Amino acid sequence: MAVRWVVYVARCADDTLYCGITNDLDARVSAHNAGKGARYTRTRRPIEILLVRRCATKGRALRLEWRIKQLTREEKLQLVATPSAIERLARRVSRAASA
Image 1 (cartoon, rainbow, N blue to C red):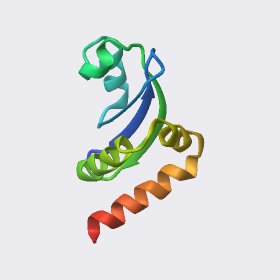
Image 2 (tube, rainbow, N blue to C red):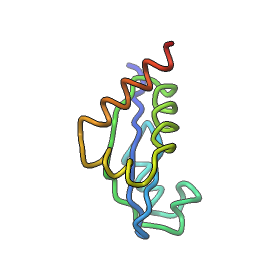
Image 3 (cartoon, one colour):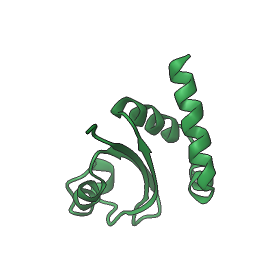
Image 4 (tube, helix red, strand yellow):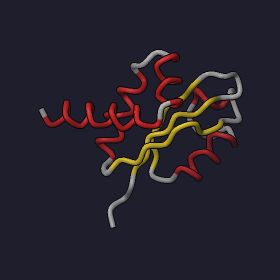
């Protein structure tokens, strides 16, 4: 069975947003909240997961993560607030990668 990757958007304790990828979300959240995750989240814990999108491959997850990181804070919040928005963004990223 193939490893499933996820892209996630989290809210940090200081109300900033963080986007990352993982193949084990529970372990990644635990690492972030233990201060052993990304440098950005070490001083901004605990984190709360706001959005998760599964991806078939690590490459797709990385491309979607990069695209989300290009969004403004307001655009990221809109993405979180509108469930269908992440699907539209993922399709655009997938089409761009195959073009």
